[in-house]
Structure formats: C-alpha cells, structure tokens
Image 1: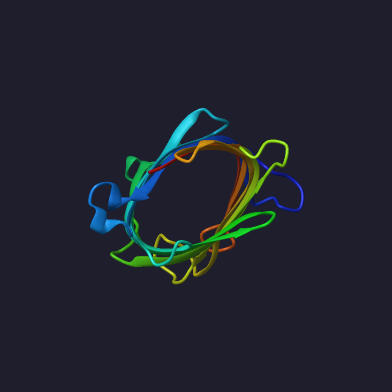
Image 2: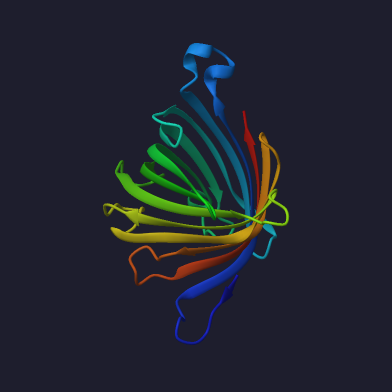
Amino acid sequence: MALASGPQENLIQDSGSWEQVVVEGSLGAVEPSLAKARVWLEGQSRTDNNFTNEYQGMARAALGYSVTDRATIWGGYTYLPTDNITAATPHAKFKGQQDAFSAFRYVLPTSFGTFTFRTMFEANFLPYNNNEVRYRPRQMIKFMHPMEFEPRLSLIGWDEAFLRANTTTTGGQSGFDQNRAFAGIGWTFNKNFRAEGGYLNQYLEGYNYNATAVMHHLVMASLFVNF
C-alpha cells in the first residue's frame, strides 16, 4: 500500500481485485407452489496490496419473496473472513465477521435502461467488539444501459453507500462508513447467465474520522446466474 501525499495525508491508496459469483432463482423450480419464494447465493474473493494478498472472502445466503414482478424482500446471512497481513499480532490478523440482514430490492425498467434499487440493513457481529452489535444500513442504485448496436452488451454503473447507525468498540464511530462506486460493461449470454467487469472504487472511512482512511482501486469481475 502507498500513503498519499498532499491535502489527504491520512488517505492510504491501494489496488487489487474482487471476483464474485451470484446465483439467484425461484424455488418454483423445486416446488411449483413456491414460485414466489426465491434464493440468493453469493461468493466473493478479494485481493489487495497491489494484487498480492488475498485478504478477504465473502459467503452470503438469503431467502426472498417476490412481492411483485419488480419488488423482492430478503432475509439472510453473510460470513466475511478477513486476513490482515499488516496486523501486529495473530489476535488481530484474522477476523471472521458475521452479519444477519434484511433487504428490499426494486427493479425499474425504462426506455433507456434498467434501474435497480437495493436497500439493506445489516446487524454486524464483529470479533472483539465487546459483545456489541453494529447496525449498518446500506443503499445501492444500479443502472444498466443496453447498447443499440448489440443489446447483449450493456454499460453499467452503480453506487452503494454504507452508514454506521451506532458506535461500537471495534465497529467505529456512528456516521458514514464507506462508499463503493462501479463503472463497467456487461454481457448477457442468455436469460440465465450474465457477466460484468470494470473498475470499482471503494472508500473506507477511518474508525473515528481522525484515523487513516483507505481507498481501494479495484478490478471487479462478476458472473450472475439466474434460474
């Protein structure tokens, strides 16, 4: 990692990559009476330190219900193991965060592209957090614009902001937590498979707003599987 100079001396900038596979579908494929019930499975691998360190993984599972053909509610669990190679002690080197979450997603097709709005509310169970639970709402807005000359090819942009709803021992001071902004392209192979790739900027605020903040410059690749 490199420490930025100039007006933002408390900002560390780094590069890396995120790869993810997201599987989602209706349980109607298993039982017709469960056509409105949905399942969401997701796995991620993340590198930092200029692509040299696989520092974090993510596994997520959720069940959902299609309120309408555009609106879905979810409830699920996330496991987020993190390996901090710069930690001074083994105690701080590895952390396995667990989250319980609820979510609401709304998909809005328009004549010029598709907007997706996703609101999540997480309860973060952080290691060494004095048995305190951090509550963290997050909001994502995504836009996909299919190209006229090749509808399978899309321009994609999304942004997701995270807030800390409360102050906890290791979860940080309440307020702004992080922001993720993505710009890239997508390719729809068929109704079941879509790939996306591009640049992801992740900004993580310091623990108490006086601590050093981190900005990751990331190459992100995603595969979405629908059934």
